[in-house]
Amino acid sequence: MASSRGCIVLLHLVMVVNEVSLQVTVKGVIGGSVVLPCSSKEPQLASEDITVNWKHHNRLKVYGIVKGKVSVEGQDPEYENRVESDSEQHLRGNFSLKLKNLRYSDTGKYQCYIIAVSVIKTVELHIEEPLQHPFVRSVGGSVVLPCSSKKSQLTAEDITVHWRHNETLKVYDIIKGKVSLEEQDSTYYNRTEIIREKYLNGNFSLKLNNVQHRDTGIYTCYITNEFLIQSVKLEFNQGAQARPEKILLVPLLSVSILLCMT
Image 1 (cartoon, one colour):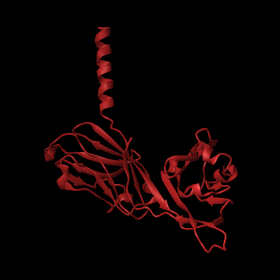
Image 2 (spheres, one colour):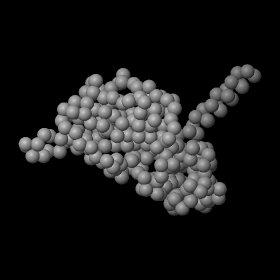
Image 3 (cartoon, helix red, strand yellow):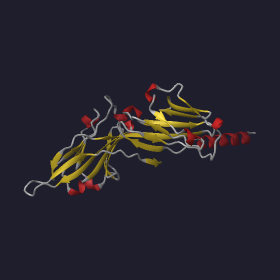
Image 4 (tube, one colour):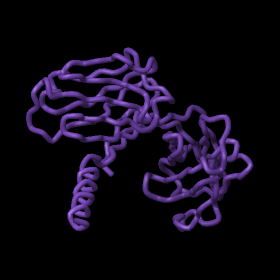
């Protein structure tokens, strides 16, 4: 009898694991639109079998499909007139949601509950914010790459920030309020700094010293706890020969949406 019970428990655990899918990450920009993907592996579904619930932070109701029909009953006011899906695609198992007029409050995790097949799909939405203030510095000097939080109050535990150069090179990390340079690329040894007193107040701007030609490119600041991404493009401005070479920080305007499976 003990052995039989053990088998039942094991089977139950396997079923729970099958209900949760891999997470998808999506990027969007303020004021733009983004598609939150969600689909079933079932090749064909009858209309009466289609019941899907979309939620934000696992509690705010974003959108619903009940027996094949769209339902906004109980929808949180934040999403009123900002969400839509293609009803023709529902019969094909595609319940992806389009979210329009993106706001900072839209960041975070969305859950798509496909009731008929007991599947939960999770989509993580990050907002990519274009910078608006360029800076000019001389070669061999220092430059400040701006990045800041949208929250007024932060605790050290809330602060996890990653600076990357051209997406791959690790420039600087703050993990749960503590600086971590263990994986920093050797190119940046002893050339980077962030003032602790400032980042505890939400200012994660990075100072890069002794700037060289190899430092050109795109620097991205990922504020992970807020699902925010801030980028700046660092490039040389070739002026007249008699003038010293300068570095220009150009705002990076990105309107692309990136989907990546983790």
